[in-house]
Image: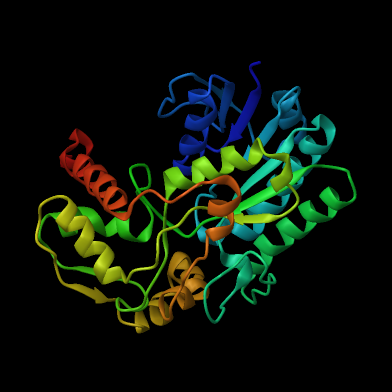
Length: 317
């Protein structure tokens, strides 16, 4: 039988997620504000405002799963952007009975000592972390009350073929030209990186596994490496020599944040790059048999995507 999956958000996570049920032969609606963009074979593009509960309800009618793969335009709009969007997803899930499957970062935990596991409390002190924690708390409360069915998958900073704005993919084009790069925080601290395709696989898997609902899962993620090693491995994957990797001066976020809103918002998440940031994804590996894409393949895909961007007609304009 063909099931309907409604994927809202057509950025890297949405594209990766839509690929999974289409490959299984299911009907997929890929929803974005414009309804245009990169195509996913077998998926149908649809335009919608994610903050409109009536429109989401219309699209999710008869669906088995409604995926929140939204990525707000920038950090500095989160506080205004997320509440109406989160409320619309909850309303649509309750009206239609589709399981609400949410893609999320790890921000809700806040700074922790040791590997992040799904049984940790959501104890973030920063505004963005508290916001994401509140979103899951409300979904979990409604799930426990029997009003909706909900599940959340959390992943770390993305790498892979679709992600362009994440930390390592952003610097990869310059590194592959043999030029040194700068990164935020410290370049010598272990940091977990999630292949965006693994995030998509995890979201699609939990959507179709009722035993996973009602809790948080971590997307399959490779062991943490330093930012220096990640850049070097991407270079080697493309047959290039590693380049110097240095951290931006700490004052950049302090002084720059006074005049640049994005830098001001990034101060809240800088802790993720100042100390080990390690993800334990053994739960989803054990329960659903999902393993992370081999690190070498993650780096190869990241390098190929970066090279494609540097050689595209748009890159030469």
